[in-house]
Length: 75
Image (cartoon, rainbow, N blue to C red; front, side):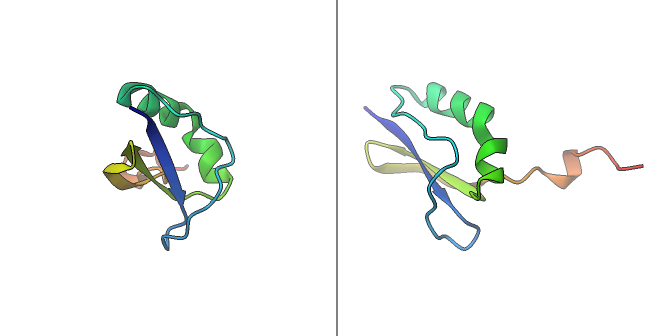
């Protein structure tokens, strides 16, 4: 099995990731990687991602934008 990510703009246009991922052997490895790389991916132009397992969509779109409700208030 190969777990892979698809990177898109908010309008659904596919974009090349700022950080090139590998093909992951487990869902956990793929999710750990996105947890570490999401800020660089967002800064590089990706707004959302989809996770695939051997070409089958598992979930998505998942926004890379930070949830404003979890952000500290600016002073």
